[in-house]
Image (cartoon, rainbow, N blue to C red; front, side, top):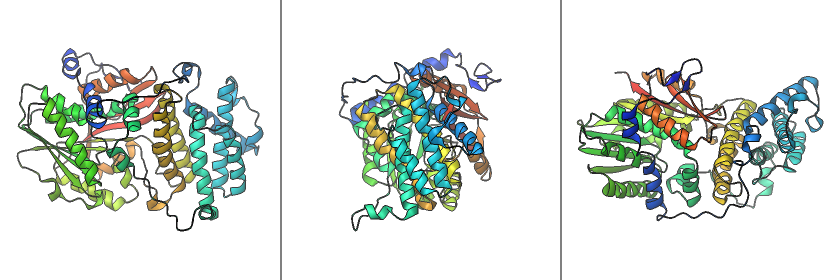
Length: 481
C-alpha cells in the first residue's frame, strides 16, 4: 500500500494523491441520492422549516457526547470505590463543564448508576434514579438528553420485566411484536431517506466497500453480486455507474441477487434498480430476489453461472446471526461454497454481544451516544425526520439490546477483531482495501465529517470514527481454496 495513505504512527488514513483515481471516482457520490429521490420518493422530499439551531452552531464548544458518558462512568467508579451516592456528587471530574454540559453530565451519571443498581438487582433504587433522570432527559434535547431518554425507557422496561410487572400495564391479550428493522429499511419512508441523505457519514463504508468490489471484478465480463440482507439497495446505483465508466473491458452482464425476508419489499428494490439501470447504464442488468431467512439459504437458490465472477456483500447482516452460532457457521460455509472473488463486510464497531449486562450496556451507550451526536451535527434539533428516525429505529434497537436476552436479543455487534478470529476458522483471510477504496472513503468523510470524522486502519480493515469514537468498520475478505 502507498505510504501516502497511512500515517503509520497513528494508523490514520491520509488522502491518496492519485489524479487518475480521482477522475474515475468523481461521479460516484451522486448516484445513490439520485435513485433515492427519483425512484423512492417521486423525486421530491420536503422538510419542515428549521427554527431551532442544531449543534452545528454551538457544537464546537460542547464536549463529545461519548466523552460525557465516559466522564460519568469514571465518576461512578470513583463513587463506588468510596461508597458515595450519585445523586449528590462532588468531584473534579466535571470541572470546566459549562452549565448545559454539566446538566448532561448529571443525567449521564444517574443513568449509569441506575444500570449498576439494576445489575445488582436493586430494582427500587434503580427505578428512583431513572425518575431523577427523566426530570431532564428529553427526546428533543441535546444528544446526551436524547440518549438518556431512550436508555431510561429501555432500562425501565427491563426492570419491569425482571419484577414481573410489565404485563400488568398491558391490555388483556396484548402481544409484543418483534421490531423488524429489515422491513422498515426495505420500504424506506421519507424520514429514512432524508436521514440517509443528510447523514452521508454512514455511506463512507459503503463507498469503500463498493470500490473494493470494483477493484476485484473490473477484469470480469459477467459479474454476479450477492447482497446478503439487502436494506435500501440504492447504493448499488453507484456500482452501476462506476462499472459503466470503465471503458477498457465492456461488461456483458451485471447480475445482483438480493437476499431478504420480504418478497414485496425486495421485489420493489429490484424494480427501482432495474429502472435506474435502464435509464443510466449501457450494459445488461438483471436482478434476482431470494426471499428466505439467512439460516435457510442453500446454494441452488443463487443460480450460479460458471462464466461469472461472484462478489459477496454483507452490511449489518451477519451480526444479527450471533445469537445462533450454528446458523452463522452454516451461512459462512455457504458463502465459501459460492467461491466469491471477494466478500465485503460492514458492521458496527462495538461489542453489544457481551454476556455481562453492564459491559453490554456501556458498549451500547457509547456506540449510540456517537450516533446521536453525529445526527445532531448533521440535522437540525427540531427536524421531524431525525426525531422520527431516532424514535422509531434507534429506540427499538436500544430496547432490544437492553431489555432482551437469549434468542430474543437480535441486535448484536462484535468488533472487527472478533470477526477476524471467527473468519480465520473458515479459511477466510482479510485482504487490504486498495488505494481507490481508501480514496472513496476519504471523499465521503471529507464531504460529511464537519471536521469531526476520522478514518483509521485496524489491521487491513477500515474504522470510521466520529469525534474519536469508532462507529463502523469496513473490511474485505478472500477465501482460501
